[in-house]
Length: 291
Image 1 (cartoon, rainbow, N blue to C red):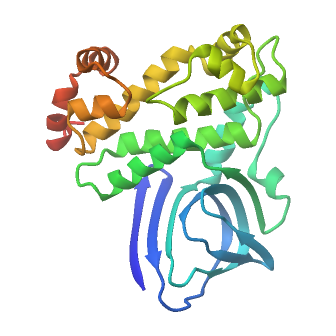
Image 2 (image 1 turned 120 degrees about the vertical axis):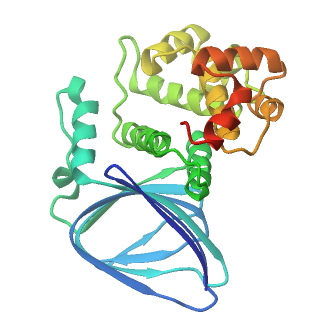
């Protein structure tokens, strides 16, 4: 059995990364009398879980927000196959607070007890999107780095949690003039932008792909996400370049190109305007632990 595991406590959150290969069957059992919430992601391999008689499987490339209380779980990991998982352990109080804040405008509430309804186990499954994959990859690298920044890791973990709470519980505010189907298409547009950051489609092409006219796409994107399509593209490009630079795996030119910039000078100018520091200085900043 080959194992690499990592556990990072950040404020009340727990970030857990496991990379395991079993050469023989190794079933395990876990029980708890308390309440637990986990945001889980299956990155490779597949393990089978039985929670109080309920079968639960998380296929590769999918995630789940799971709620547990007073339970017994039996884990059956894959044999002769690498199993890689990433999870956020979320305090019930944090989840309830976040749900209350996100639902404030809708004058409704979602809390742990309302979701689980006295059962031992409940889950919401979803497909892992491109931006979340990138953020998870960088959180894993940060966990292995001696120069990691707990504050930046916490911010990334909370962004991932916020992203899936909005998606799973349909918490995006409904701007005037837009239907639920329009909002769903706008989320799809955002995913397309994130997955084609290096060579993004034109606004007209993007409109056709999601089935919205360009006027509704521009107006709706700004209303839903608080920024224009092009500003959002610029932001995710700069965020990605920042992650590459602070992980020490790319120089300025490589980070610019990987984020979709063909002009390094323009990239450096936008980077400085966004973060207040030149991209060439990031390596020194993180190397000496200033950030």
